[in-house]
Length: 323
Image (cartoon, rainbow, N blue to C red; front, side, top):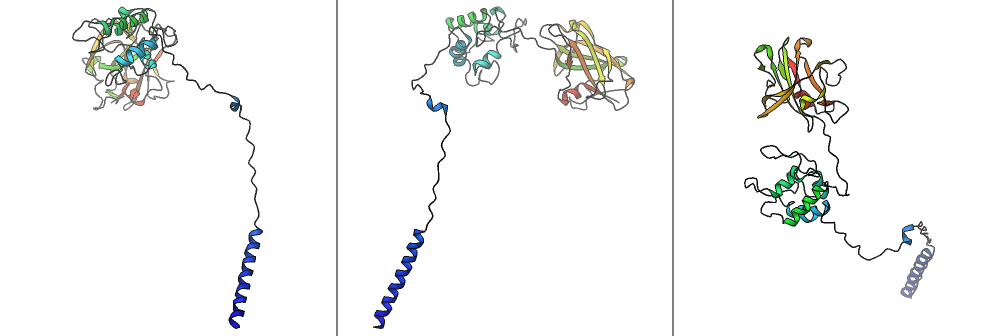
């Protein structure tokens, strides 16, 4: 009897536990989340055309056509005009910018050419010369894959038509400012002893001069149109502070028609412009910075060489130290 009573007791306890568990479950709180309404999107009302947009091929007589059908496939090959060197034919923009009014790097013995493409004149366009030349040493471009006559005709027509750009506009003649290529200096009272090479073995260091000496400084400047001896303004300033030129000493920059040739950077270079300064105006150990000012016929103001924002090594190259 005791065993039966114990069994009934256990069943009652189990039933109570089950009832309590069900009661807890029935008391669980329900949480309802409201999804916010999305704002109106005007693009949802557009019905897009699923058809394929037809490709518009460029006119073969236009520069985009010349680039796509000739330059890109014939010249922009690996290791050639693929950005390895100019002209750069990788894109239509880079091709145009490195051809039209772009200065030549190679030239004929008589230096006939100035630009790779001179609009309106095939005879003065280096590109035309290179794709038509019979010079066996120079070689006709593209090498080993000569253009067909019809392809050359397209290029000729484009040049003679003024070499219009991607949008059909004819380019204007570039107006480059005078550019700098070096300095040489001598002591005229000491048998023209050359001093611009005395830089302690580092080309960008100031060159060394003695105190109380006249120093003749030749400044190499060239321009794409104006000969150096026809520059105007022609001044040179000397300052011991590269960032302050208010109290700089100013002298005239002289010129001559026949150039003075001197070896610089392993080349014989022509110098047309020079000035003379006496170092008694400075103290021993002063570093004196040089700036030239010239004006060509294409600009209304003088060009500063080197510019105030030039790299410091350019400014120290254009300087001397008094010993």
